[in-house]
Image 1: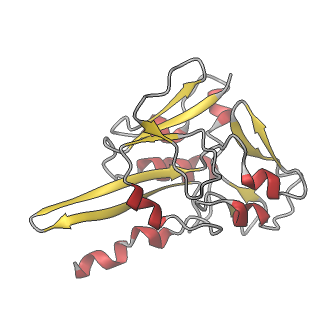
Image 2 (image 1 turned 60 degrees about the vertical axis):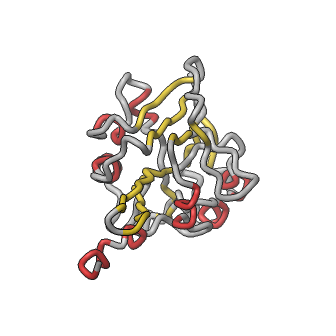
Length: 197
């Protein structure tokens, strides 16, 4: 079985239930995220809207993080990209290699962590934590037996990216928020600036 994530950004309401569920599932340390929803405000008053982009590891066909890892701690399983913590030395080469910032090193374990597509849940017939918690049904998992929606595209932050995950309705301008070679940053949501708007 080979799995793939489909995210419909047109349905996302920016509630962050997916990010919270993911942090709870994996006990991600404060300030670190395996999955994050970023936003972008577009338009001018009174025609204003907020666009959302739930993003996590795209489980690339040819992962740059896997190539960069000198300890062969990153490998592919059922279409997903996984980290073998027993082989990881926390060097951070995988972080530098990722074009969207989907990997971080846990400050307590000193091991690389990222979205696993909740493979442990999929293997027992459950949906990933983010999928089961999404109030808008914006996130789904399909197998290679199912057709990919024709309007779903892979998010590429560099030309060589080979994402298996697909997004529907994403604004390419949103890619400016993704930080190549750095982990997801909670400040990307800029909630501290809302009071001044």
